[in-house]
Image 1 (cartoon, one colour):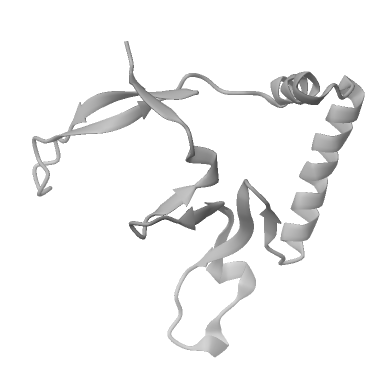
Image 2 (image 1 turned 135 degrees about the vertical axis):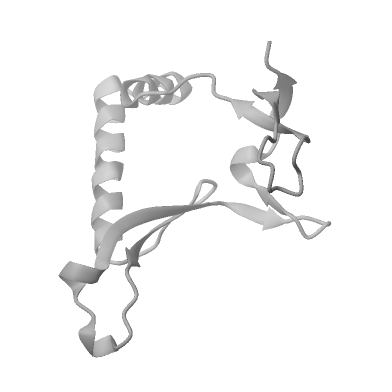
Length: 134
């Protein structure tokens, strides 16, 4: 399992890192719902119908629980929660849900643990290798 990187030069003149090169990941494509279904089937011998049902149900339950204001924790994957973005008001009595809520977004925090250097080691990143993009 490896991710690919390339170097990108910072061309923002106001930046203290102007002119320096930074690693940037290069996407190797996207995976569709159907491709995930097939991967689940290959990994555990589940039928395609059962895998579709499982992933569809997971999507529905995730949406329902988030919509009820709960944080959904998937061990080894991470935490999903909804949050709102809003415009500020000077007086709380002036706040209107319809007028001042600008959008609802889904936050995701990958599962992980603090390592020896106090850095968080994310479960989904463990054992991933890095290679140059050609």
